[in-house]
Every structure is written in C-alpha cells, then in structure tokens.
Length: 156
Length: 141
Image 1 (cartoon, each protein chain N blue to C red):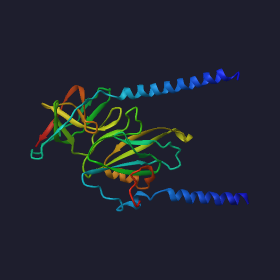
Image 2: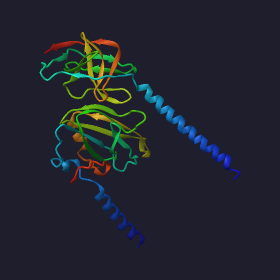
Image 3: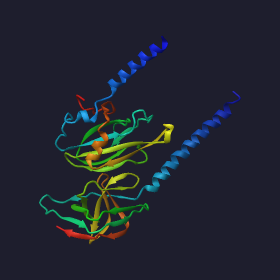
Image 4: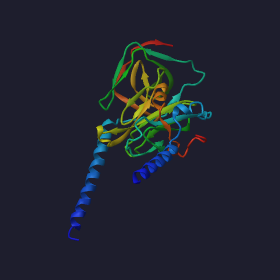
C-alpha cells in the first residue's frame, strides 16, 4: 500500500514538474515575438542533461541580472543595439563580450563543468556560438525557461 | 564548551581556505587577462565607400597573454571605423573572437599594412599587440 502511495506521489510530482517545464525550442519556432526595431536578441542556453545538479547562477548583461541558467533550458532577452558584456561572475570578469547590431541575434552557450561520472559540477563557462544554425541545432531539444528571467516573453 | 576553541579554529581554517581559493581563482583569471585601453571607435560614415580587404594566407598574432590568434587565409574584413591607432576591420565571415579572461568579439586594428591590435566592440577597448604583424592583404576594394 505504501509503495502504491509512493508511486502516486511520484507521478503527481512528475506532472507538476512537467507543468513547470516550458515548451521546446522546436515547438516555439514561429511563435517567438519579433525583435523590436533598434533592438537585438541574446539567447542563453545550457545544452546539458536536465538531471545535472548544476547550481543556478545569476546571468548578467552589462552588470544587470537578466536571469539564471538551468540545464536543458534556454531563455532570451531583447536589448537595444550596442556593446555588451555577459557574465555570471561579477567579480572576475569572465564571460563573453560582443557587439549587438539592430535585428541581430546572439547566442550564449552556458556550460557547467562536470567531474566524470560523479555528477558533481564545477564552475560555469560561457561561449559565444556562431553560426546561428549551430546554436539553433543545439537548442532544438531544450525547453523555454521563462521563469529564469523577469523579462519572460508573454504567452510562452 | 571545552571544544569551543577548536570550533573557532576550524572556522578560521574554513575562512582561510575560502580566501586561498578566491585568491587562487583571481590569480588564474589574471593569467589570461591582457591590458586593454578604453577607446571610442569612430564609425565610417554611411556615405563612405565600402572598403574591404582579403588575406592571401594565414596570419598569426601573438597576444600579450602568451596565447595566439590565427587570421584565416581568404578571410575578408570590412572597414567599419577608425581608432587613433588605426583603421578598424570587422570580419565578413562570421563571428571572430579572441580569448582573454573572457571570450570577446574582436575587430582588427591595422595601419600601414600591419596589424597593431584588436578592438573589442563589446567592451569598447583596444588591445595592442606587443609585436605588430604584417597583414598579407591580397585584395582591396
């Protein structure tokens, strides 16, 4: 009886967690809001297993926190065209920097160091990904993590 | 209560380790860092003719942090502006980056046929090379 209850509880938790997970990038294709004039878009994505016990860290765009990383997920923010530094570590200055042109999309891959089969994770690193096709291919199976950012796209 | 001094010592040990770890990480990040100068690029005017260059062979530039950057043979670069140090060229073959303490998009800064350094547009900074490199320019437009 107890194991039956545990099964029900596990199923309920799975349903709740599935509800939290956003749609996959593939499914969102064509539903994403257009980039406003004079702005560009910055994607953040972490193409790693969702069961990775990676700590979520604050991601900053020009020192402003825009969201947090999450394995198996992605989100984006739109920003006016200009110069940008993206980092997760405020004090070391690691991360990436780039020029964002009007209408342009930049892709930032976030990766957590994984120590072999232990499941333990180390620091996060970031890479600018180019061309766009490579990033889109890597994001194909990732889920929208709108909750990561206060700038969550409405309706997603 | 008798164990209190030991706990206190343990606390100091942890603090010491954290301090050591922090200073080690800062030292490691400093290894990759290079000195840059904040600078504002003057963009080319829209009315100016488009000016591009193409490299006939690879060019390798040594960065001040002992790493090096390879400019591919056949790569094309468009003049997008100027700094006091020279003209600024942006890659026409996709994103071009250099790795210092962070990965930064980089434009070439050249004058009189020599690569003098890189302009990091995301940081509005110029990173000079300690040794300028002759650019094997094949084509100019």
